[in-house]
Amino acid sequence: MPLTGSCLCGAVRYEASAEPVFSGHCYCTDCQKETGGGHLTIAAVPDSTVKITGPTSMFSKLGASGQPTERTFCSKCGSTLLSRPRAIAGMTLLRAGTLDNPSQITPGMSIYTSRAQTWDQPSENIPGFPEMPPRP
Image (cartoon, rainbow, N blue to C red; front, side):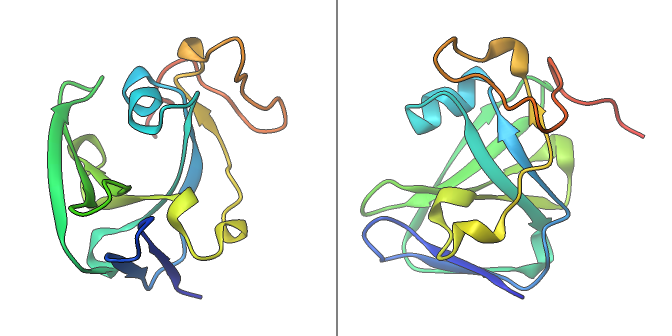
């Protein structure tokens, strides 16, 4: 089932034709600043499956990995829709809150839990990692 979503004003729409490879919560400082909250929830899909329509802009910043993360947002309303961290090459991280049906996502992990705010603590019902999880 495809994942579809849009920005706050509706000027930008996206569709991902693949099921998420993984999904989760990120508590890193950059995600807190991006959302204005305690964490960000994402669904990761292969880059090649994502189609975007509408006016977007991009912001790039080095992440904790030392590699850039490119965030794509609506040029009209500023809603961040997705990011493409070079540390996870080939993956697009869709913002779960921008999905037309956010209930399609079931977060499977929390990362950067060492940076979680006291008022937004990670769930004990899913695996949590103080930083990035180890790679296989």
